[in-house]
Image (cartoon, rainbow, N blue to C red):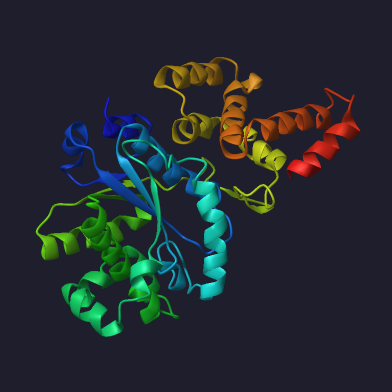
Length: 340
């Protein structure tokens, strides 16, 4: 099984460029995904692309995580109904620190043959002048093609419209892809399905300026069976930072997964094999009251994000709070408080 086959059985392919399956079956690629530094922590909604990079590395390809120190100062209009509040350079730099640490839990930066890279696109976006950018990049994009992109068109049709700042975002992301191609021979960009238009823009720019064929693959945007955006709760976002979302709350988020969603989430967010997932799917059908699949999902993801000690504390807290265990309560609460 190659990487594309792996993505397919996990239902992770929303769209891909036509030649990509064949390329992944025969070649080792360098690929990247961009992460938005608009907050000090990543959240569970970013686990899908993070796991995408981690799976890519396990199949022998080289992953690059772009932390958008440059594009983060602009803001991606994709999926947004109104203009983002612009962050200061200091805010973005502060947010980058926590994000880099979180990504290091999933990617191997010391792998002997394909070590992962974390790169801040501020390295090149902060140094190029407006005139250089317009001459080198802007001339290859028509306003008509940009207005045809769904994210921009939706905002353009609203009363408030879209600023030129966010209108220019696809050009910046396309330039990122070009720079990564030049510096690292990066030939694959991945992301959520809302990034498809931006990815195609980068592919086209590489074709025009370097006469090379680059590729793209996008994952589905995850929503629950009830139609709620994944990761949104009444208490707000579910963060990967234990200081913002305690391991106990994190565990509870996953264990409360709807029966209709749990199998897809096991495919998306764990390393379980197809056979292991199939066995858990059978348990959902035959004995849903045991919530065996949800327990396995919660255990796997909590340990992966927060480590075995935090998982142990979350499990014990769950037993106590649901009346199965009362001994050692004070000692446990002190341990949970320290890990939270």
